[in-house]
Length: 129
Image (tube, rainbow, N blue to C red; front, side):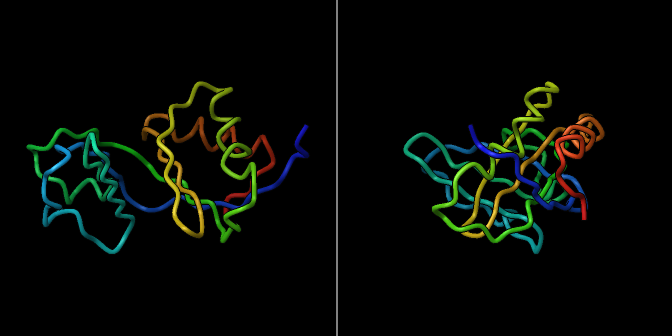
């Protein structure tokens, strides 16, 4: 059994979108910005997370996410970081879209679930800073 841990997190300003393009699509010029931008290409798709306002109307995209940023950095061999944060969300039925960088993790939740998400992670002992 893993010991409980306290994580510090912030809520990024603005709303985000998660878009799916064809696997061989070029990276579009709107997939930039000074906030969070994540590009992941696989053999199946090009997935883009970026500010909602940067996305034109045409891509296959889900808008209206808020983003919770875990305040790292965390070592790449550290275990249980993301699990400690998203388990309380799962228990409350909050949908998540998680992504990781070298230093930390980001958890996107639908804006309509933000209050429930904040209640859940704070009840689990995590600190909003």
